[in-house]
Length: 298
Ligand code: KIV
Image (cartoon, rainbow, N blue to C red):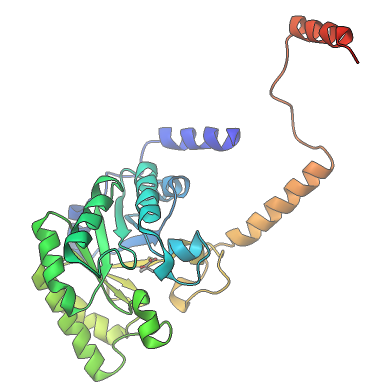
């Protein structure tokens, strides 16, 4: 832990790779055709490293429920937990745009509660944006959130919080009818004031139409390359998950490195190879200690 802390403060002291990324930066990038990159992130330490890489945006996704807590799906991710993680990520990466995911049942049941919960992500969670999985029926809520000053990213297409309605994870827009529905949903969200769209698991030609007609940035997650930006789950990219979608194949094998580091640690413990011990007594204290030990009753 001591070494970790040293590494962190060294990292914090490094000059940042670029100016802070804001919503305005992302808008400019989208307008000029420069692609932006987003990754999920769930903790301050990782956030520091990602910021150092110059990553434009981080998503504290409800996938935290699966990745961090080991739940079988995102619907189990607790609201308070996600707010806390979001604040940790923003503290770790204060110069990066941080988007917080609103978890299942934090915005579906009651609009007033949804607005309060979104507000908590901005105040307690230090988030820059909130993301909600939506269809057209959420347009009035998105509008109310905008009115309240809450920047909303409208997550459309495949909505993992809806997976049970489909008997499992599903792709969206694969039939002509559902593709047209997706275009209508995108337009409804733009009209309601969403600041960005996130399209998940949709055919590239459908997303292309959304991007073509959109005045706001479109992030894709398995939605094709025409999007202004792309997001995937970091642990997929790091090779830490058992399976990855084709658009998020690992670029490194951190999972294997963790196993190797743990095995090396086991060897070091077994052979007492612990490095130089950092906590030492001076000679006076050692002599006093030894003499006190001699005088102690056995
Ligand atoms: O929660 C999440 O990680 C997401 C992305 C995969 C889009 O919503």
